[in-house]
Length: 194
Image (cartoon, rainbow, N blue to C red; front, side, top):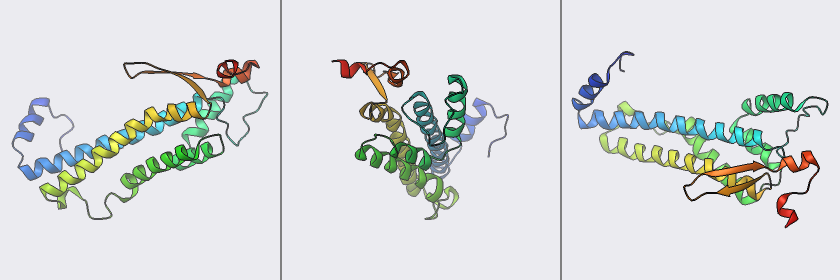
């Protein structure tokens, strides 16, 4: 473990002095941290996407007499208190395609592997050789890639479910519009007008 006030130069020196085995273990631990962040980022992204979409309803009635801001704050609080499994369960009550629900469950399984089962086979960094650390590092990088892709795929899933309209740009960016605004304004969806 590094001291909390380690400098960049000290860290570089420490890494240069590592054996190949210690460096493989160091990378493995770094990718554990990266995977933890990727999972948290995906879950936060899913919560924010569900929050934005007025057509994603929660079983708990938020109260029609409550103003829209208070409804949104309550909805956000309820979503943030939910587990990933609960978020997916909420989406199953909506018009999400079965293949998309299977995909979200697959993503959850990858998350659960990291959170609950990574060490079941004795994959503790201090007990692995260099090759085993490299194998585990590749697995963790794969989970990070899957989580990153899932963030983008949420919008495509929500578009297919009729929650959002998307504009996809050549630079990879997405503009998502909440089609629940049509419901709120009593207007037909723009796609149904065509």
